[in-house]
Amino acid sequence: QVQLVESGGGLVQAGGSLTLSCVASGNILSINTAGWYRQAPGKQRELVAHISDGAGKRYADSVKGRFTISRDNAKNTVYLLMNDLRPEDTADYYCNVDASTRSPWTRDFYWGQGTQVTVSS
Image (cartoon, rainbow, N blue to C red):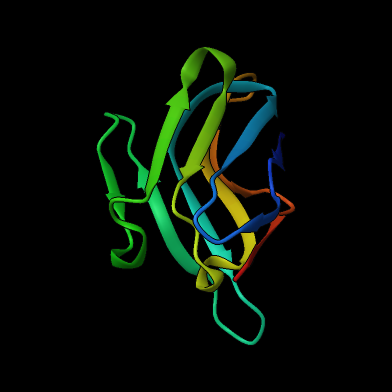
């Protein structure tokens, strides 16, 4: 089994920055791909950023140039650096990881519990 713990959310003024972290633990063999999603009140969950196992990255148009996704494979951690935050970035942020486990070998998607980001104007 794989557990994901997100951290780094909080309250920030518009124009500020936050870095979210998602640490994976458990019987992990590797993190293959990972993504950050967000869900604002009354809205559907949306993909914010995605990183492939080859470290290719893609972003939602609304965050391009402001957010950066990265990974540290040695630490089984995925990051989301968020700069120039805007009130419309306010949401619960979730990481989603495609991970492989050892003994027994499995591959599945896992979700974290979410971390809240609030941007004040």
